[in-house]
Length: 133
Image (cartoon, rainbow, N blue to C red; front, side, top):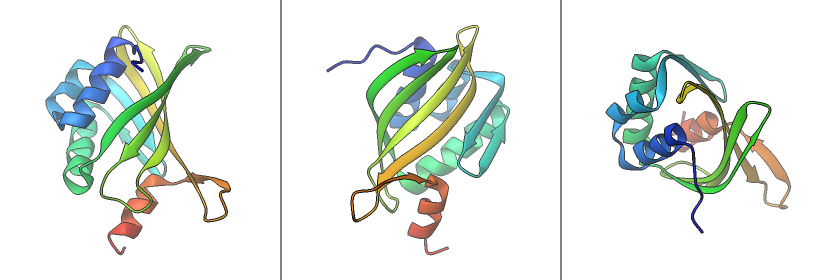
């Protein structure tokens, strides 16, 4: 099943999967913000640095599962796989697009506990746990 994504989100997914940090300039606005659990990143240079660090540490991939829009926001539900505890996890990427660029991105990962109960997983915490921190 192919999921059609808006250009900036498609570019983001391709950049995540390829590790091409420079492509972030093609999808994020210069003033963009990202919130990934307890982490807040602001501005294109900081976003590029954050993505490069995460890709190098966790060699992750993003596989789109569902896409929807509502009230000016776009949500991509995807499988996030990589070298971190709990991989793979189902992740919701919440985007705000402005002038065909990502102005805001919030990332939330979902996982289940051993009993199958749905949990909101703080992905950076899971990654730190996998590193023994």
